[in-house]
Amino acid sequence: MFKDKASKLDDEFIKKFRNQNEELPDDASNLEEMRREFSKFSIDLENPFKVIKKELSDLINIYEELGIWSLSHACVESVKTIKRTLETCKHFIASELVENIGDSVYNSICYLIQKIMIKGDEDDVEKILKYSSEKVNCLIDIFRSSLMANKFHAIVFVERKHTAFYLDQILQKISKLEEYNFIKSDFVFGNSRQSIKEVMNNSKQV
Image 1: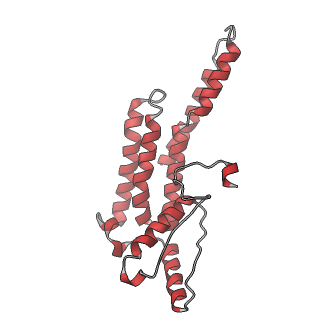
Image 2 (image 1 turned 90 degrees about the horizontal axis):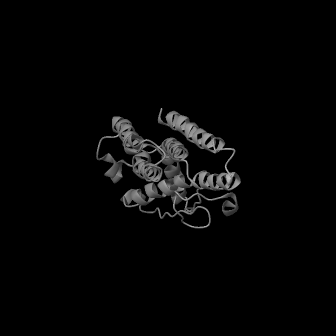
Image 3 (image 1 turned 30 degrees about the vertical axis):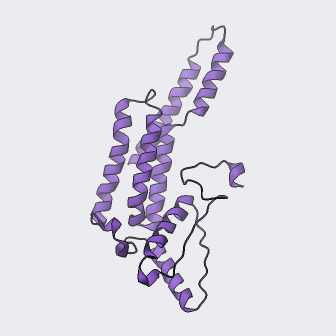
């Protein structure tokens, strides 16, 4: 629901810029300069609704790949990103959207989380695997089997950098339990441990 609404607002945001560009007066003496300045400005400005779509897409992926425990932690950071992005565009969008979107997303996701996970369970290390995905639990089983065979070294490749970040959090947390204290985990994406919110261009990714 939120993702569809963000897509609609994204389209409206782009249309607004296009319309403003087209409505520049044709008889303006400095028309070309105005168009260049507007074009440069519109490129530099980050579309807040595009950011919201990406954050919601990431949250869906986190839930599918890692489970509800990781979602509960990722949700907090995603809402911070959404609010921060909206704050930079207050003069372009209605102020009530700035105030309400972040809170609405957070409250809705928290409501869904609490239907599955009891409040406070996200801080209980012993329940992390219970609220993690089948994929995560399968990976832990592989680790345990490999340890028994004295062949415990692993590199886990994942599709998205936030998956690497939150999977590492799971492994770091459960390694505090005696049953899993053989796990020593770390992660890397790109060429360093950069922020999961940092956008890398094609050149940097290569």
